[in-house]
Length: 480
Image 1 (cartoon, rainbow, N blue to C red):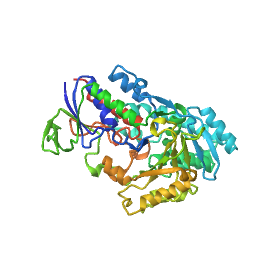
Image 2: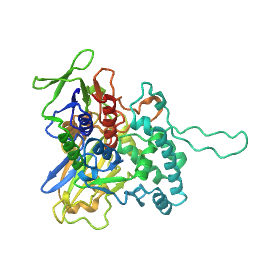
Image 3: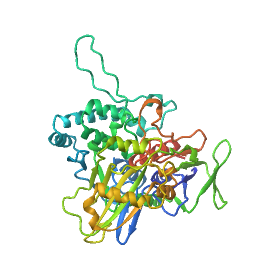
Image 4: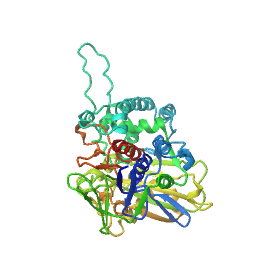
């Protein structure tokens, strides 16, 4: 039995703690705040509830595996999972609206062909097929296994570019795509399809002009395996993982800020803010230990929570994406040397059919936008957040304005204060690509006895990847 201290009660820390306690380790979780879940937060007021972090779940098999390996109940015994149908509705830059089915590539292709014409759906389907090739090439090394000591194989983008049409013996094979935007220009050849692809990059704070072509694995995964909603919001999933820790007799210490790691050559424990020490054979950090190592400057998330008068209209989509009408203006606003706010950005409008999140006869809705991080943009300037919330609401959901009872706004500055994430940045998933810059930190560090877990560690951000990070780290530590 090893003595293990987990720093941080985020989803990665809790999942790792449950796994490690199950195999016989004595596990203590130290959380600086007074609540669990990390980025998976929820705001409640006057009977309304809103997710303030992740809102939908991909690859629920990750948490099914966690529950199976750590207890006697299934994930579906702990939370109610519902497939989201349709998967999304998109209002494209030119105003065209298209509804995309959940977990049905064939129906997505059909909808795009019918709406955009000119073989648009067929080209999107071919893109997803190349995304499948990326998935098959990277699933194990990039999601299910620790980063190898030599990760150079993952420095190369595995995206398979299409062959050139045969035009004689001297025909040249086209050059590989230079990134995601190049894929959109050469293979999709439609501004609406480019906007669909851009949105996957923007959702995780990536510039599609720089992101590797391997990012096409994200639309492949979502449209092949589906997206899921947890009744009660994602907070219900965090509560379920916490309960599993309690069942496995993990010691949970809230208000226990870790100030320092103990030990010289190897980690021997932690020093808490109150001056007490916890000895440990292993420390697992679900946090960025040194601020200089954080991916400061990468975009964060702006959230507008709306308490709406009146019931949710029948047939309302769970998720609607309103795309920026001026793509280049949005990218320049986010990724230039001096970032600014885009007045008409890409907005995700979430309107779950969940009576647990609103008083009877009313509706809760959430608008989210990718925006500059707080360490690159002053989100605390007087009136800035509320003024931007007005602009986002006018742009993305003008029909909701007259129904608003009240609203709450959260900026990257709030995320930084709440979670400690540098600049309020939201970690993105690890991707294979040139130079390895798209990889996250390895789970096993150079310091013996110290491991990393969570969104800032391999294989990156997002609920599914954080759960995978916990599984990889627990496997590295092993049994007593």
